[in-house]
Image 1: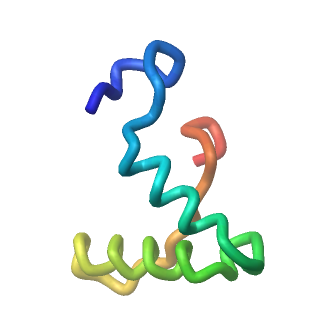
Image 2 (image 1 turned 90 degrees about the horizontal axis):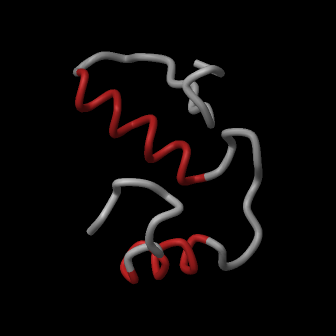
Image 3 (image 1 turned 120 degrees about the vertical axis):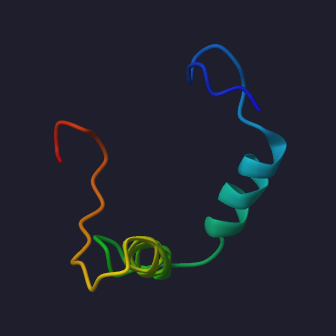
Length: 62
């Protein structure tokens, strides 16, 4: 995989397939979706704490 820049190469096929699977069917937004819940739980496990997790789109938003 090449992650040098998002404008130098296309996305890896495995990533595109995962995005396509996530795009199937309806899902609530603004953190109420199952993917956000899974990401928050994974972060709690990594950091071994009951952290409140706020997923943001950019470093500036953090």
